[in-house]
Length: 321
Ligand SMILES: NC(=O)c1ccc[n+]([C@@H]2O[C@H](COP(=O)([O-])OP(=O)(O)OC[C@H]3O[C@@H](n4cnc5c(N)ncnc54)[C@H](O)[C@@H]3O)[C@@H](O)[C@H]2O)c1
Image (cartoon, rainbow, N blue to C red; front, side, top):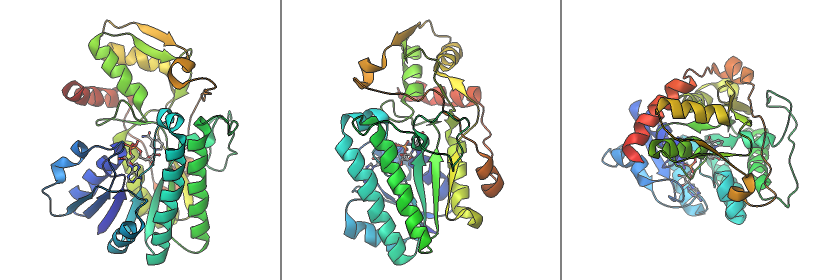
């Protein structure tokens, strides 16, 4: 099958591309390399079933050509990462809203199934644990840029549902903190990347706030598995799914585990949020998905435990950081 992966040179996208090529698909990657890297896909450059286009999803005629060519679209291109969004909120909102609008418009025109990457940030600072897909979103004021990422992805979801009302087969995935090889220290999973780099160098491991905030760190194979299932399972069309593990880990525990796995002499240093994100930053204390819907409808089951995933990630980091 010919498949378009926007953002396919990024962290999640490039792993998805590996799997699609492995199983024999022909893959078109559209990526402007803003946070993605050519090194993530360069092992495919000689493969005649792989096509890389260094351009933006905001280039309408190009998106039209690619969507027309392909039978299935994974739309992952986005301005990603809370820190980037805080630093350049305009780019984030425009890429995430306009880019998705363009891709959906042509998916509708040529009637192509589309899987959209959304985020656990959608839930904002909701306190009802675990997060279920139909739960209310709880966000801060629009004066705090941090919330624009969540809001831009929510508009993407609304757009996708609106096209689904017109019959277009869409599936939305809310990823929860993915990590693994190719993790960009500046990107989404930066806490794991940062901790590994700091622990490898024996530098202080910098924990924001009190370190008791928790996340459900999901190994990349489990993220990709959910993404592949979303396209394969027809019953999932028109729905949104949480994709992640339900194993909750505090940032302090994470620091301790990484330190132990690397037998690192590093100490933990507590840093106020403001020092990194600027004033007015609000964090989410706990972020835990309910994956019952993904289990039941997609047959999704995350398999990789934190230590196992961290070991594989550390192995990669030793060679690349
Ligand atoms: N990694 C996670 O834990 C996580 C969690 C929630 C949601 N997501 C979502 O998953 C998707 C992939 O994220 P990722 O973690 O792989 O991040 P990433 O930054 O590695 O991937 C995003 C890719 O999109 C590309 N891109 C950005 N703007 C573009 C544009 N205008 N045109 C073409 N390409 C563009 C970037 O160059 C990059 O390769 C994103 O939509 C993100 O919002 C990721």
